[in-house]
Length: 500
Image 1 (tube, helix red, strand yellow):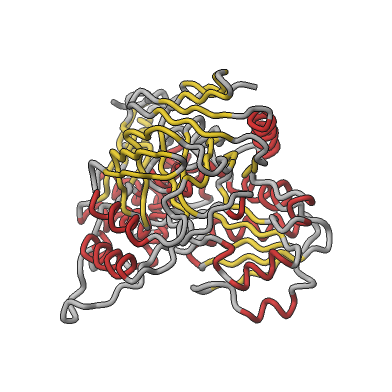
Image 2: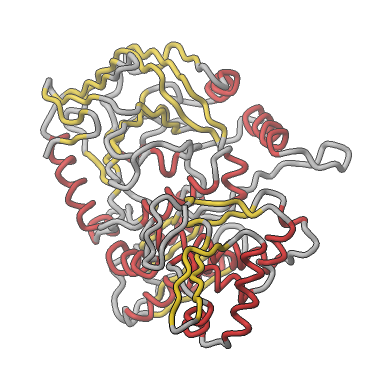
């Protein structure tokens, strides 16, 4: 469907995949990428585009014709003006994606491919998701970290994450603070501890998910599924400690992070989407990309109020019952338990009590059930273990402990992980309710899924960080989607609607 010159294009394609040689060659020129980005936003003539760019009309007209021949732009309408027929062009879709494997094309250099991808994804964030990365950065620096003038903020990330590092850096400067950016893989280095007294806060941006698999295939690289399965076998069979298995980058697992948090430094672990992570986890990258940026771009003070209200409600009751259309029916006591909140804002009280850390995106309340009180069944739950989704999970709990477990998909992995747990790994450890208003559905990644608004997560194993008695080698969450949650017989959550 063609748009008119006023931009009415309701039926224009949402996306097109760049996969033909002619399209790749057309986009190997940075000027054409810029022209395409402008024609995504609104239709224009060659003269108008030239004026927008500050370029010559002849040069722009040539590039537009090359884009048209490649099928990336089209004529929307022709208007006669003063005896001259003006042609209005517009991009054929609202979004463009590079097909998998396109980087193998000899005409497309790596830097150009990255530039095209960054340009298109940046446009998608602004126009489709309406996400402003500068606004996100200001919220993280000012709202979440409460950065003051003169503070030193350490940001650790990779050069490929500069689309968020640069706005964070600018937000730090705007707050009158100082920024130290560390690049490179691996955990925080010990050398940063030499200046811990001067540091105010730390942001660690999630690294691309990479499993430490060995090349055991005679020097031939395995495909993703083979790598993942081989790694999981070694990990689980070796009995490796897997505390908070669904959340990579758990801050308290790193000794440098622990020391910084113990010294009263605010610490944020910021989730970041990458194609590599999405591929390894079996998630569509664009779904992961959209979920990340939408979930980060929220009103954190509003989230703080939501979490505080739900915390107050939960702390006023004695027993929780969670049910679902899938057959879940579980009760447990929470009387006298403190309710913890993950609202993205690190308060002075949390810093003083050694809790000055959090994950972004944020949004959940957490409580440890009273030991030995959980009775009932979880039906149709789901989880992920280092990127592998396990679905259709049925758990039976008696006197607070899992007595049977099975899964419709990846049951072998479920059984293997459960069999390797040490200590109280089969006891119910925690109950969470997601409160992030921008996370509406789980996507198979625990860092996001546990924040899904109005959904619940029940996790087994260690709960010592939230006032429980369990000591175990694992804390592993199982989601129940669209549950009904009642407190002392009164419904507080139903169909993703919350009391208060």
